[in-house]
Length: 451
Ligand SMILES: *[C@@H]1O[C@H](CO)[C@@H](O)[C@H](O)[C@H]1NC(C)=O
Ligand SMILES: *[C@@H]1O[C@H](CO)[C@@H](O)[C@H](O)[C@H]1NC(C)=O
Ligand SMILES: *[C@@H]1O[C@H](CO)[C@@H](O)[C@H](O)[C@H]1NC(C)=O
Image 1 (spheres, rainbow, N blue to C red):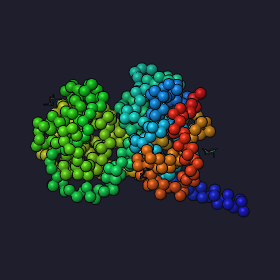
Image 2: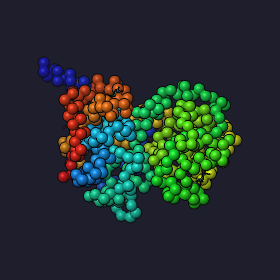
Image 3: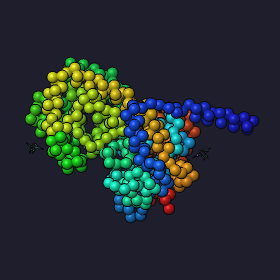
Image 4: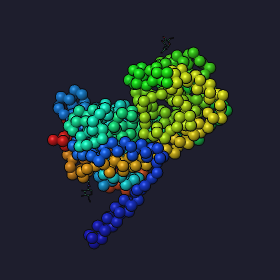
């Protein structure tokens, strides 16, 4: 009898595992980017000391208390298809969808795909850590092809880290800005679900004017000469400078910061033929959504990439500006007006691209492919048995769903409704949730696996 029961349980587990996908296809350019970025470790591969060196970031109690350094690295380990967390972010820093969105998306990816064993850190910031920048000359530790600015032992190494934007000189791996894709009320997924409504404005009825609206601030890479136009000049801060260009060309451009003009909801911006996109602190999560609007997207020059940017083609999916000189958006809009069919087909190509490569199933496929390539780099057996803490991410999400700081960050019920029945870990009891809550309240909770 007992044996039979065991057989039934084992069979159920087999069926559940067999149901998970083991293959999917990405845009070749996106796949190529993953291959290039995960090749960073060369034959040396990813060693355990590299992974654990992230703990050095939070070496002393003083650093934890004064710099809240344990708020930036979210360590993640995947074993036997289950996603675990190796540290918990302190309670006072919980809330932002930038953090939680990726955890929800990884959980969903683990339910749809058979994820390989991997271990990495999600760096919680608009900017990937400067410590992961490559420096000129020299190989990394253990014979890795390139050295970074990583200051902890092994110095010059590259712990596997993910972030949602980076510039070419940084070694982190890119993941979707999942919070903006799936959590916010005006998320990409929500916008995509209401496409039939926003498609209501016919191209001919849209105003042939460039529209832009944003908070007026400037990120560090503008104005400093890190982004330059073809004439050699530094690109000015687009979010401030476009106020001036708009004032000088009111018939072409109404791209203003919110200190100057009123906000307009995203779903109403499709009344304009041309939508202007600028970086915020980093890449704009609105850019992804603009691609869906059925308008031609104009994108300011930047040195930052998102996970799919390699596959986007300028003048096919969007029109770049601040490329020739700082005022070239004026020429670009005049060009679009004079080439209405081409502008229209770019708007269509952008929407088609977004639906095919940025939709939720495409993002889950991306995570699967990224982690699959990453998993080939490890030189030690990745396992929770080697870690001091391994909290199943679904326990953490259950905790978020009932915590006042996080319960409205993301619609968790979407994943619970869909996957909890088949996931034996998905229903922790009240005592377990209390235990997790206590760990979040302990400011020094930063398990030092490197010791
Ligand atoms: C993963 O599977 C292996 C082999 O069955 C097992 O030894 C290990 O304990 C499992 N790990 C976890 C975290 O369940
Ligand atoms: C924008 O216009 C304001 C007001 O005319 C002017 O003071 C400022 O220098 C201009 N900024 C740039 C970057 O040209
Ligand atoms: C989140 O928690 C607050 C406070 O307990 C509650 O008022 C609100 O209704 C909750 N929201 C959701 C979506 O559960």
